[in-house]
Length: 480
Ligand code: NAD
Image (cartoon, rainbow, N blue to C red):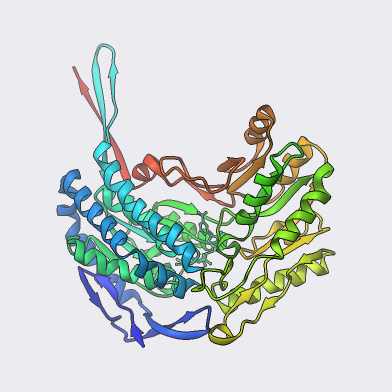
């Protein structure tokens, strides 16, 4: 049994309490590692280490910080196969997906911010004719980064890399459900020569060590990705301390298919945007809005394709879907499928858990599920399920599509499929979503602002937005 360790002050250390949490492989249901159940005492050590490291890290040149971040990126690259396998075992996702998506993106995050920092600039304003102002951006100090289980290393590094790049010291907590690649990253950070105390990684429960990070007086900013209910707790903990807070939360994203769409492209990409990573991507389109005149054709073709998707061992290259992340999550998804039926929905394909033979007989698998016949306002179509479940909803015209798309409390991402450019722009402008993809999905450019509206979050990550979030601005005015 492997015991994971915290990474504090440059060393891998056991939790002071000696307590551990089970780490389960969702494809087999077996406990295969133990995670530190960290508490306030471990956090105090991490904060002390970060405080000691901050003055010198903040004063390290951008070139030096860049070199270390790029070294971490290249160590991720050289360990890519090992990390992809670890991610697949820890999360249940197909290993081939981890290889092409999660791990390359984790490396790209360090590469992107390790080079972005070299191109940072500050503004100056000439106040004719009496003064000149210049604006400095300084690292905040000690910042907290808390991430979820669905894209473990991908989202963890998306926060840590910009925070470190601008000179902060970081206290980071990965999800207790998928801690393994964050642990492996701490080993790589030691190998890369990251100075001690600059990054501190404390493992454990969200309600315990996570909440302590949110409430800690010395941690001056929190970048959080996870569920909306947790985001609310973090905002509540941070508000009285006037912490800077960035929240990337849940979604209930509409995928709008107009009758004039490129049918094949919309169909193929919708399979991916519905079921990639078992539907456990905050950007997945869980509500497919289809224009009435092509509704039946699209529905039938879609269902036919979904029926061919293979749910299987995540280590098997032929598996399209692996396991969902935990037994508890499997039950939540199955409960929503039951609710959909109670609300009058018809299951067109899937709707059940999948029991595999052999190594994965005790794993947590759910069949890709397509439902139709539900009101857009019922719970199934309003609440985030975060699994391989989509609902099909017909619409008559552009105005109805916009109204249906905007009718949930969320506003993270939306997809629009149409060959008509004015329609695409008109609809995009009226959707209440922070991220809109026209005739594509998950086409990412790391320079663009990333985040949601309404209950999907607060603030934006990505590009210079993240560098701004992790810095304090200071304007200096000189009278001429
Ligand atoms: P979660 O909110 O349960 O947990 C996220 C992280 O917060 C974990 O590390 C957890 O331990 C920690 N946490 C839990 N309670 C806490 C507390 N009281 N104080 C501090 N930290 C606490 O979310 P999850 O189930 O891990 O992830 C799934 C959710 O994340 C979905 O809602 C999904 O939409 C969302 N998500 C959003 C984005 C985005 O970019 N908007 C990306 C990925 C996932």
